Image 1 (cartoon, rainbow, N blue to C red):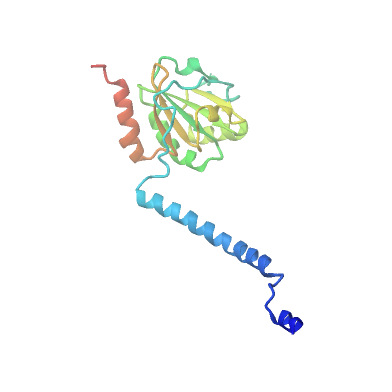
Image 2: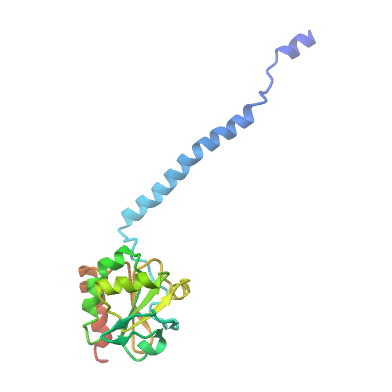
Length: 207
C-alpha cells in the first residue's frame, strides 16, 4: 500500500526550472523594447528638442587652443595659420568644428561663408578626425571662411570643448568666455533666432 501511494503522488518535473528561464529570455527583448519606447514617447511628449543639449561650458572660459595648421591651406596667396589662443584672443570669435566627411557640415557651409563677411566676427575652424587632402579639397570646392584652422586628428580638442557630434559651433567673447553653442548645422532659422541675437548681445555697449 505504501509503495502504491508513493508511486501515485505527483513529482516535480526536472525540466520545469530551465523552461521558466527560457521563457524569461524569450520575453526579455520585448520588455527592453517597451521600456525604450516609453522613454522615446516621453521625450516626444515633453516637447524637448533632442538637438538642444545644454553645454556645461557656456558661461565659462573656453578651453585652450594649440592645434597644428591644415598644411597646404592658402587663401589669397596667404597661408592660413594654425589655430591657437592668439587667433581669437581679444576678439568675438566663432569656433566651428567640421570635417570633409560630415554631410551637415557641407549643408551649413554657405552660412559660414556669409558669417565670415561679418566684420564683428573672427571665424576659425577645428578640422575633426579628417584627412588633410580631403579637408583641402572640401574648402577648395566650397570656399574657405576661416582665418585660422587647426587639425584635431585624434579628437582630443573636440573632447575638451565638449563636442557631441559635428558640426558644432561656439561663440566666444573677447574675454575668452563661451557665450553660445550651436549643436548641429546652422540653418536660416537658427542663425536668425539664436546666433545673431547672441552676437548683438555680445557687441552691445555695456549699460
